[in-house]
Length: 110
Figure 1 (cartoon, helix red, strand yellow):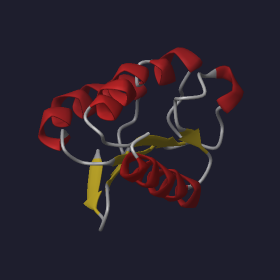
Figure 2 (cartoon, one colour):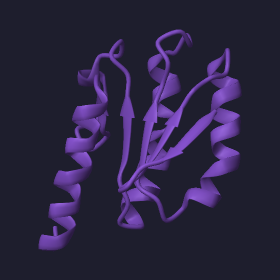
Figure 3 (cartoon, one colour):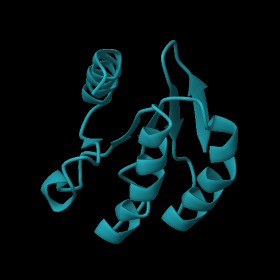
Figure 4 (cartoon, one colour):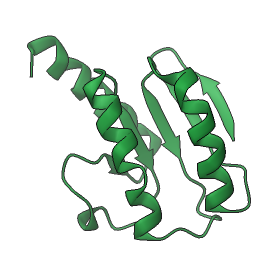
C-alpha cells in the first residue's frame, strides 16, 4: 500500500497482488488516518468483487461520522450496484470533486 499526503487528503494506492492483502494492510493503517480525508485508488490489476467493495462501506460510514470524506477510485466496478451514499468514482479528478462537495456540505451544516 502506498500513501501520498496531498494538500487536502491522503491518497492511498494499492500495490499488493491481492485484494485481501491490500484490505488487511489498509485496516491496520486506518487508526493512524482517522482524522484524514481519504481517496482510495484500487488498481484494476487486483481482482475484486462487489462483496470486496462492500467491505469498505463500514469504513465510509465511520469516516462520515467523523466529518471526513472517503472515496474509492476504480473504473471497472458498476457504481449502480452500491448505495448512493457510498462514493465510488472512475477517476481521481471525480474523487477530488466529491471531497470538495462534501466539504461545502459540512460548512453549510448538512
